[in-house]
Image 1 (cartoon, rainbow, N blue to C red):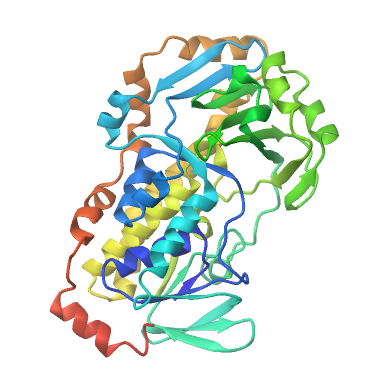
Image 2: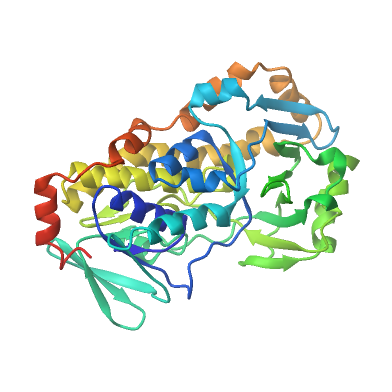
Length: 417
């Protein structure tokens, strides 16, 4: 059983299916879908997508950008330039791209629909709890019905009810981080800002990110500020009159872009501190339910998909013993995912949002003129995929389940959907 049909939940279903395990995905919404707009796909995310068998589908809509850029938002100077050329692809085994979140989610959904004998997709099914009975789980639904399974994966996001039962920490309040988003038509974007890059403009307590989408038909704009909490909301409308004064200290070039949208969408950001347990018996957490992080590493979806691949590997290695599987899965994933959680926070104070004046000049001096290889070395730990992700794609294609696992799956068919 998989609670949640977002990117992490669908990825988990696919990873398990590619190792011969059946699952039911329980999604509370009336249909499977993904909110949000642009998403960056680093090489480790591509390795996970390839392992799940949907990399080629995602690439149809992705834009393969040429640089990762950071400009000083006050002076307009280019501070960081990371080339994403053949050297980058050789180093990490995959390119860097940007796309729409819906394109990743849609490709994962198509992959699940292509395996109806292994993956059942249910909508309008809200999980409200679970009970463990021996080596199986009863999933409790909002309509008071129960669904039995051999194991439960809580991929139910920031407001995870599965996490509530395992960790017991309440959802943290909104941070003082506010994110304003807009998706523009490419012809609306000033020509001198149509970079083939994921571009970031950095200034005190704020930054602006933009990049092209969907074959250069659209342009994603995300502007983040740190200041007074406005609401506890998510996906709320915001006017330019609310947004623009928070970026008044920027130079003219990025401000031209900020003045373009007639309306923004506001997201109040949340994150959790890492915890040292995601598992209770045959129940485990995955994705945001396990390691809710701020977006500044552009790795939230990548970590969820890596979780899914690790889950498939551990289920296979444990021969369907999910209590053992989940402990191995947690051991593989906890340090890496938690390191990304912590690193995303540190980017704000150390690089993106430094105060104007001497601190800004020191930041610029540290990075100006840095060679590509130094950036690649610094990014190796996150962009190079774990071995189990890199090897999953090779071992999963056409691989038959061992006879012992097939017997176990058959004998527990009533317990494990």
